[in-house]
Image (cartoon, rainbow, N blue to C red):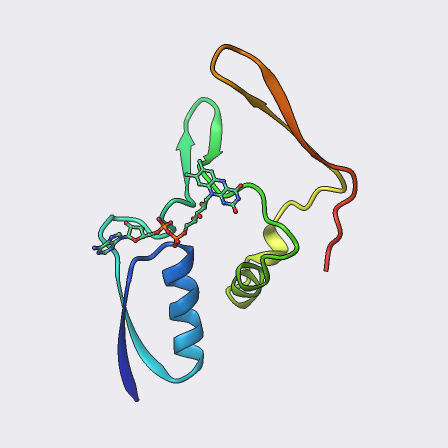
Length: 106
Ligand SMILES: Cc1cc2nc3c(=O)[nH]c(=O)nc-3n(C[C@H](O)[C@H](O)[C@H](O)COP(=O)(O)OP(=O)(O)OC[C@H]3O[C@@H](n4cnc5c(N)ncnc54)[C@H](O)[C@@H]3O)c2cc1C
């Protein structure tokens, strides 16, 4: 079995590691921080509950991300909305919205 080292346990490193392991590589994943997920993680607050840092928006074109989530059994845990309207607040208070009228689920 060939050995490979993947550096970084964010979405990219985790997804590469899963693909490599599926293709009979012996994978060693090296992550600098004490957690996996990289920029995509959540924090627990005793008063307000769980906060996701990122990522919140997955598009249908995210083939590799969706494939990775399916492989690790997490895709079914996503909360997929029928329509989308996310308010963003600019510095100064102006609010604008990211909207999509219909979300197609593959
Ligand atoms: C607040 C926020 C909201 C977001 N919202 C969205 C969204 O809605 N939709 C979307 O598509 N994207 C979103 N993103 C972006 C998305 O989260 C990132 O594009 C994605 O997580 C990047 O994954 P990655 O594996 O490429 O990199 P990262 O997640 O940055 O992972 C890199 C990993 O490598 C590790 N590392 C770095 N250097 C070393 C080293 N020398 N040795 C060992 N380990 C190392 C780091 O610790 C890290 O864990 C958001 C990001 C943030 C911060």
